[in-house]
Length: 359
Image 1 (cartoon, one colour):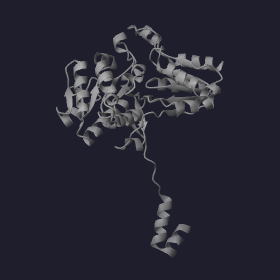
Image 2 (cartoon, one colour):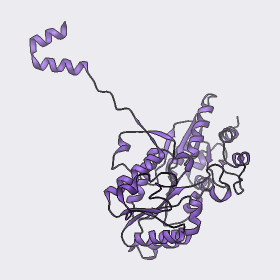
Image 3 (cartoon, one colour):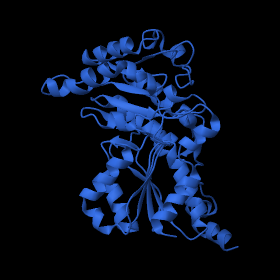
Image 4 (spheres, one colour):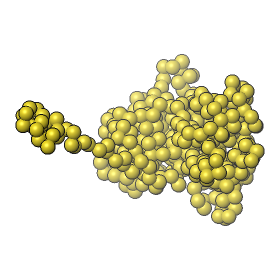
């Protein structure tokens, strides 16, 4: 009745006020996007945005990619920009690096980063060092991308993690996305960057769906290199990881939360440059640190993080030594039970956290 009196007394303006009070818009629901589709969308948008961008690699065109990451791109952009190559990593990587030096912006796909060893001279000596050796006159805007680390049942020659290998080399930027948002934002940033970028994906993450915000679906959405992300807030221990093992850390944190242990999970996203500030800030809050990675322990990503913490101000905040959870120091076995025991499992992360916290 009060609303009706308001309408009769003040007319049309009052009616519009009443309607505004009665109806409201809900926030748009987050969209579920797989890591595969996020990578595909990022490449599609950058190919459309910049005619200098092109993709080359084994089976990327007519077959839509070995893992279907480049699905539909050949039909849309044709043979000139989506290029199938022979099985010759040294050859097509050299072509891509030369094209980058000539002013194009190639995306060079390795069917697995294990095969990038065939092209290591092109990646390191030609791509990574040229800008320095030319005193900044010659840039090499290229992205080397493909699956990295262990998959399932593919044995020693197809299961290696190269994060530490490439992270060791000045002149390269090295990123390792976990979520669909990471994959989209980091790949778009990598393609637009004027330096060579090693983009380490994970085969087992391709089909995993993640919620993506409206902001992350923008064509101009990028994630800056060297910026880690805190995926879960916590107060007792910091877990630092990258790629697939961020999921393991979040699962371990969920289990321990039921026991009253609150883990802070840091998703590195960027291996080189490394966001030491984010790690230090978290360690200063929790006073404990556990690093988790699928690569080998010696000279690994976790080892570098340990050194940085020891050398910096966060060392004085530690209440216990840093613990590393890594792959076992052997070539990957083929048998599933041996493979499972060669890679970090959720139970291994929980065991290391409890050891660090002395509980």
